[in-house]
Every structure is written in C-alpha cells, then in structure tokens.
Image (cartoon, rainbow, N blue to C red; front, top):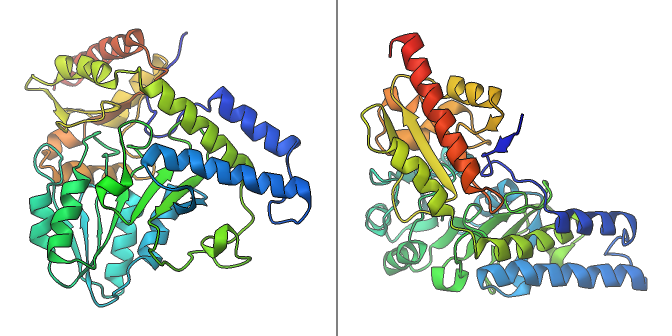
Length: 377
C-alpha cells in the first residue's frame, strides 16, 4: 500500500542534501568549533557560512542569527529575556503556537499584564485589533507570521507599524516557523526585533532552530555557560544540525519557488469548503501549505485514524499541542464546537504531488460520508 504523508506542518522528511551535511559533520568534520586548532576553526567558519544561508532567506545579516535547539527554545528565549520593561504589558494573539502562548501564560502567572487579541473569523490577526490592545506601556508584542493551524498569513509589517506608533519602545517578535522558506520574508521590512525559525519544518534535522536578533538589540542569553555564539547562546553548538539546517533551507527555498501550494490547498477548499457539513478554517492571504478542515458532528481523531488505515497520514493540529489546545485557536476564530471537534489539518511540502492531494481528498470524502452513515450524523 502506497503511503501519503500530509502532516508536513508537524515535521518534514529530511532532505538528502541535509542528511549528507549532517553525516559529513558527524563523521569527517566532527571537531568542536570552540577548539583552537585549524580544523576546528574551519568548522567555526562553516557555521558562520550556515548563518549566512539562514540570514539570506529572511533578509537579515549573518551575525543576527543565533542557533538554538528548536523554535520552542527560540520562543521561550524571547519571552524570558526579551521583555525589557517588566512593568509593561505584553500583547499576543490568540492563534499563537503553544510555545508562545504558554510562555505568555507563565508571565501572567507571575503578575504580568498579558493581553490576548482574537483574530477575525478568517483567522487573521489585524493591525487594528493589535493596536486596540496596545498602549504607551506596552513592552512586548508577539504575533505569529503564518498560522501553524490554518496557514493564514498575518501582515506583520502593518502590525509592527501600528504598535510602534503607540509604543515606540515595544519589542516586537514573530514566530516565523511556518513562513520560513515558504513565503517571502524580509525581517527589516517586517519591522520585527526578533523572529523564530525551525529546521525540521523545511527538510532539516530535528533539534535545531534559529532566532533572528536585530542588530543593536541587546538581549541576555537564555542559556548561560561557555559563551558560544558571541555569548548569545552558550553550549557546544550542534554543528551537524546547523549545517543540515543551512543545506535544507537552501534546497527547500529553491524547491518552493516552483511549488504552487495553494493549488493543492484549493483541491480541499473546493471539495469541503461550501457544504453545510464541513468547513474550511482560515481564509486569505494563505501560504497554501496548510488546510484546516472541520466536519460537523464527527471526531477528528477518528477521521485521522481511518485515513491512516488507508496509508494517508494527516494531523489534528499543532503537534506541540493537545487537541484541546488546538481548539483554542479554532475557538478564537469562532468555530462552533460541533465543527471544532471534527477538525483535521492537512499540510504539504514541495514533495507533495497533485495526485497525492486528490487521492487524500477522495479518501477524506469517502471516510466522512461513511462515518455519517454509520453514526447517523
């Protein structure tokens, strides 16, 4: 039985070029980059080149890239160390990834004034709604660039501009995990101080992330120790992961240029977006890489299990959240409970073919119709 993998927002297959890079630095160039001999110095230079590759994808300078263990670490770093004014309020959107949402809730538990902004019914966080929550005492604002649940793209540049007009000293962060390599990104144009990224969403190894820290923005390290990465993130660098990340980012970005993700997403939108028994969650603008579908009266877990039985792997929502927490995002969009409980998330990569998408759409249609017949719903 052929298997079709459609949970790429959770993780992606490691690209061959990334696997080759990992193996090269594990077996041949395995030296500790903090050592003083020539071979180690060459590895340190290679890591600088890797930072240049990541920086080029987002319009940054190489020295503005700090490598981390994952985007969750990057997001925790910005909340732990990026909130300059401890007395100021913090503003996030209701559709943030769990690592942002829970970091904000940790601040709230310590007495911080945390303000949560709901999206519009299409899942978009608008500059107007963010501005309404901001005041002159706002210290920190975090809004996801591309939703990991729906694929909706937020206008971060407009949000940054609106925030700075009210609170010029506010720090602005965006979780860019699902935007990185998939849509055009220029952090300078976005007006952000901090931007989070992940390797394993674009064909790199798990266990590697990155954080853009704007030049001139002074932030204490999240992990203290030996002072690696110019003191911004201590700990012996995961050279294999970093070099794999750079190789994957270059290859994935190149493949994405000729990949029409929205064409695949539209296959599901046309099939499930106009009936009374199903709905598409999230509108435009959209990366196209993610489609969230809700089926009234059904259970998403059962649908996904039936799809798996047919060799088609799909998700229920963020792999870093429970299903209940995933519904936090849909609930903030106003998705009724009878639909939200029957939600699944389908996500693509440049490896996904039109045949894969159509086969999955046919199977999803058959399975949900069969479930309704069997359950009387």
